Image 1 (cartoon, one colour):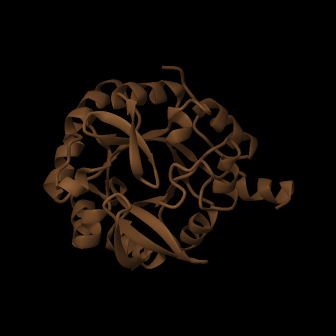
Image 2: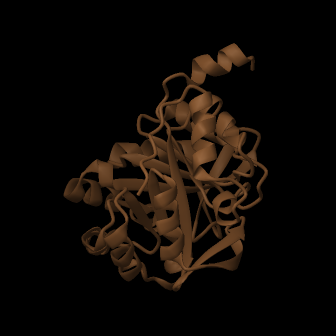
Length: 267
């Protein structure tokens, strides 16, 4: 792709820079392919740092909640919301409208569901109708099974569903999902870059914003996400947790590509 074409594709596209925090118990963790979880530190300390550094949003995901049939994030979110004034999305172990309501009361702005949505698709509609589609994020964990096909997985990338990702995206949107959190299990934690084939395929069929997650390893990976993947936001974890790149440098790279990004206000 030539520079002029890159500029044309990226020009004026709004892009959000989101810090993703995967949680196990009281700890911020990070793995590879959503497995082999390693403790990083306190989720709230990292969340406050990313807020100060200029993240547009935060995503908190309880990585083991679906496995154990519970959600453990309401106290963490309540503490975070005291000092953080950007949108917060929460996912993991949400099985009912009441679970969603508890987290929204705790300070979350949006709810992300994956495992429960697959087992009970009407939950998407119930949450959207109760709190608005803007608060209903369909979280999709995708694994490639052919050159241009991906399967939906649940339980933190452990369980096959037999669902085609594109078909599930269309169904989820029709049921009321207002946003898609798209995680490549194949690329997650690998630092080898985003799955741009996955991103571009899903973006081409989606009528709602796409958050791309899984694999950002270097500054230039933002370029592929917005010019080839044409996503609306990128969710980053490893690259931020290990201080391999700052949010401000990623923001500047997006600006250089001609993207619209929120101006960072010192807090």
